[in-house]
Structure formats: structure tokens, C-alpha cells
Image (cartoon, rainbow, N blue to C red; front, top):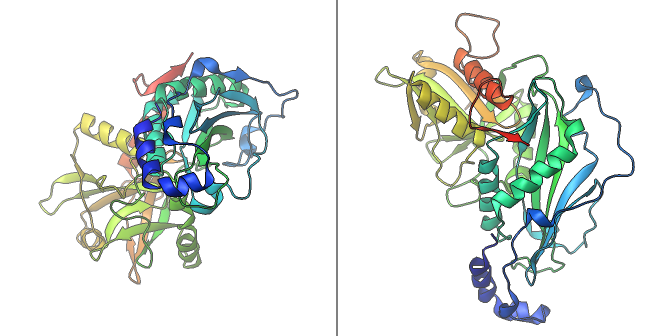
Length: 399
């Protein structure tokens, strides 16, 4: 539900400025929740042709419809709509353009071998979406209600969900501040929308290990900032460092933080290290959720599987590049990989750090392998769950 008390507090802090441009009082704030039962559906008069699986490019093709819900501070959430995919009409003064009132999610819908539609741990996406909205003073919503709406939307677009394993329908829930006002205050209007794009495997020919540039010039996020939220401002700042990494012959950034160069994330993914610690114990490590790390759904799934399997120690703790370098030099490094919704797992083969390339092992039993055995096992197991081949409560049927 939309958090009225939080919004009232925010408005109270800027009451004078608010009253100068908005002829209303704080008493007009009401709590009108998001309701899936109020959904209105308008079907497109003509449907787009489907794109063959082999021609799909990530984020390039979009489906016939979109889901939209407007919010106003005086009224709360309006009736949701599924309507033909179309351009948004926004005033140039809308606060999303000037102060980055924008957050989003990334999730997928899958078709199993019986043609049934599945979502993967969607309740985690709803919770994270609410957290991101709260962080930038956008309205809260009932995650169960939004999930009902998304299920309806996915069923409407079911013909766009590829049946082949490795293919899916990528869903992009987004919320933006739409108030027409040049002032740094909570937005009194917002738009929540969901669009969808059919996508193929991140690596069309299977795994392809990547090389990283451990950037010391820039940081992605910092404690108590917005690193733990999916807000647009986290991503635009990564493009220039990404171009710098590419220019130097690397495919992605490895984001570092602090004087001791702590690992944080890989590009837009969470980061994992599998090594033997300084006591010789096998350990899977990922940086802790300290407010600067995105709480990834795939991250949480890998940690859950690793603890369930019990094959090695699992730790959420800080790891520095000097420690990585020492582990590589001493032969204690076994695997490193990124993890996220788009690719599930992205193996790492090399890190450029302070003018030195560190070679990261992949599969010691196969010199041609592009992934280590544990990275592949995590990837394959999660995919089995996503497509319903491995029964698990993480896979949610859309009925």
C-alpha cells in the first residue's frame, strides 16, 4: 500500500514551497491503494508480427500492449489499464527529466515444456520495486496487487513468450515522477508502467567468459546511497567507465570501493568469488548487502542453492582486489562470475588491475571451456527451475 505517513512527512518538510505552487493542504492526502480488480483492458486493433527466435536482440522488440497505472497524491492509485503499446505524453517540466524520479525492475516470464507460463521469484521483484520507489519518495503500492496485474498482462502477451529453452519474455516494471514542476520536492504525481520484450539467451552460442577492468577512477555506489535500489541514476554514471574499459580491451567494469579497493559489482551484476581461503577451506564469497550492493534475485538464489548443497562455505563479506591478486598468485582462486537476471551467470576469465592482468581460472578439466564447473552448475540449476524442469517453489505458475 502507498505509505501516506511517509509522504506526509516529506511534504511537511517543504510545506511553504508546496503551498506556493499547489493550492491544496496536506489534509488532502488520502490512501487509495492499487487494485487489480479495477483493471481495464483495451486490446490493440492489429497485432505486430512475431520475431523469429534467432533474430531477437535484447531490449529491441516490444509487445503489443503495456500496463499503466497513474497515481496522484490527492486521489491515490487510479484504475490500472492494459492498452496498446504507445508513446508516453509528458510535459518537458516533468520531474523525471530533471531530478531522476525513476526506478524500475527486471524480471522474466517463461514457457515450460507443457506451454505453461512461469515467473521466477516475482515477490522479490515486487519488494525491491517498492524499496526503490520509497528511496526516491515515489508512492508505495501493494506488491500482491501489482503481481496480479503483471500476471494478467503476461497472459495478454502470451503469444510473445518464446517456447524454446533459453528464451523468455523480459518484463520491465517502471515508475516515474510526472509532476510538472521545476523544484526539488516529492512528486505529487507518478506513473507506473510495465512493458515487455521477447529475448533470447544472453550468450547465443553458450557461455562466453568476459574480461574486466577493475576501475579505480570511478565508483558505482557508496554506503547509504542508492546502490541497493534500481534507480536510473545508478546506470547512466556507469556508461563512461564502461567506454573506458572497452577502449582498453576489456568487456566490463569491476566496480571497486574504498582505499583498499573492495569488490562491489560487475558491470550491472552482482559478483561472486570461489576460492580456497587463507586456511585452505573452499569458500564462495559475495560482497555483503551494506546499502551499496543491489539485492539481486539471482544473487539470493545462488546463495540459497550453495547453502542447500553444502559443498563449500558460503560467505557474504568484503573482498578486496589485493586479496584477489594474492589468491590468483598463490593458486587459490578457482572461479569468479557475475550474476543477474539477463544472463543468470557471467563467467570471468581476466581482470585488469593497476596495469596488470590477472588470469582467472575457468574449468581445469577443459582448456576450451568458457565457464567453471560451479558457475555452470548454478546457471543450469536456476534455468531448470525457471522452466519448470526442476520442481521448486521459486517457480510461480501464471494460471
